[in-house]
Amino acid sequence: MFTGIIEEVGTVRAIERGAQSARFTIGAETVTGGTKIGDSITVNGACLTVVEAAPGHVAFDAVYETLQKTALGALAIGDPVNLERSLAVGGRFDGHIVQGHVDGVGTVASIREVDNSYYIYVTASQNLMRYIVRKGSVALDGISLTVVEANDKTFSVAIIPHTWEHTNLHVKRAGDTVNLETDVIGKYVEKMLGGDHARPETPARLADLSREERPLLGATLADWD
Image 1 (tube, one colour):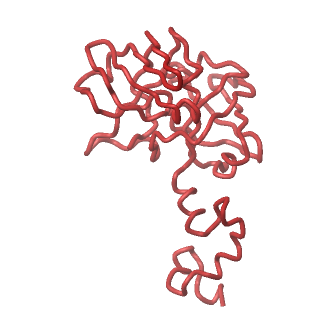
Image 2 (cartoon, rainbow, N blue to C red):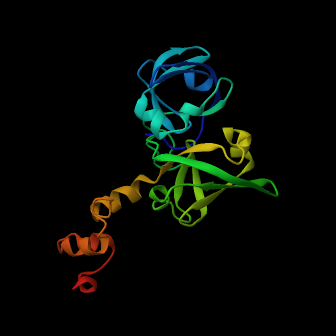
């Protein structure tokens, strides 16, 4: 599990591309401390397994599924990437629950500077936007952020100076792709209510809940009967 608080911005040093896979070697300093083969680190929000670890760099294999569902396939040598090691037991939980399981890719529509902050507007598919709500949480390239506004196609996030300077956001431009991970809680709630794609009849599903389950949704029995 991760928190979305970026520890370091690394640099892509080498890419070995296979037919449907890739190995990325990332130059880094902070996240290499105590890191060993088999550990998990998020690279731009995608949880990857360390396959090589040495002072100054780490390497990861990205398989077909990862390259299809994330923007990692568009990385080039010299690109900056956000890095975070998995949360240590007893560590501070400063962001939100981030799994490192990228849900899909969004596109930077525009970036607007407001005083010392930046507003980034991102477009995404409706399948992703259904889980993105105003004042909710979203991970953008692995960064835990609060949603400012959201409609059915676009959402915005506000970036403070520290985040702007200490992540890869300062190199983003309109048209760039970003990895998105939506709040896992929303996905579980939707599934429990039968509101996934296989069960579009979400309101009708509520009637299937037992009397014992209904109060867990914040309503009294009288509200249902």
